[in-house]
Length: 184
Image 1: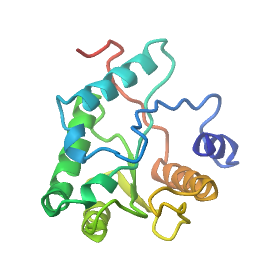
Image 2: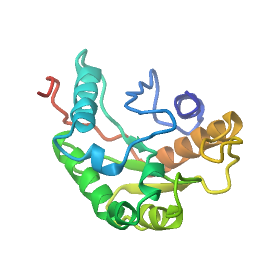
Image 3: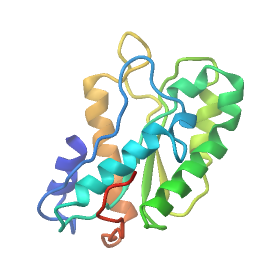
């Protein structure tokens, strides 16, 4: 909500009216690995279904994807080593399936992780070299006592950071050509 409210209240923003968010997050302490979001997986198909449902009533468009994931990929060296390739493939597949090859993606570089390979995953996130992919670094934001989740104040700060990145990424709002029918 901080992201949406910040976007709406920026004086120089060309965005007016309603900002809709299509949440696809999987919360909790388990989290998900990037491999669970690959094309054809349950989570990927759910993401596409939700995006299509958000466009059903017309008048709206998908302006960007906000992506914050990776803590579970810090546990195993192989997952951490494969993270960059899997993340890049996910972004390219998502753009293709949403029929929006230049769709801006704003991802968050981890502030924490569940395992010892946090820096390996962060390096992958910060090193993604795809057009219209911007990385917002959460490192240094305050964590809860569990040393995994952001505090409420840090989440508010991150929402503002994501909104600023979104507004600076788009010289003019892009329109999505995502189909307005549900995916199987």
